Amino acid sequence: MRLHQVAYSMHQQMESSQAMTAAALREIAGFAPPTLHSLGARVGSAMTRRISNLVVTNVPGPQQPLYAGDARMVASYPVIPLGKGQALSIGLTSYDGGVYFGLNADRAAMPDLDVLGQCLTDALAELGEDEAS
Image (cartoon, rainbow, N blue to C red; front, side, top):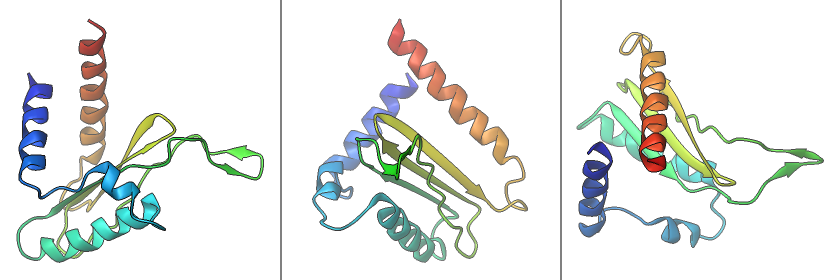
């Protein structure tokens, strides 16, 4: 049920033309996922002074392995800096067939960030179980 609610909300967002598609992001020449996460953080920081204390970014990354010399990069965890007055930032990115998220929070505003991380992990595992059945 939760997955259907999220899918419906995402469909509504896409219909409103307020979201940029992954294909559109890939077509922006010269922009790498960290650059786009940084842009999202700056936009979020400007917005938080007005309406929220949370920023969430979702940036598609490369779907082929990257290397530094002979060392293969195995994961990519985004870290979105907190702006003034922000309590939480959540970065989401894809890389080489996987999806990775990074959480950053103000300890005073959200001392139980580890609980949120565990809830996200549990919810993703639950969705995976639902897919298998």
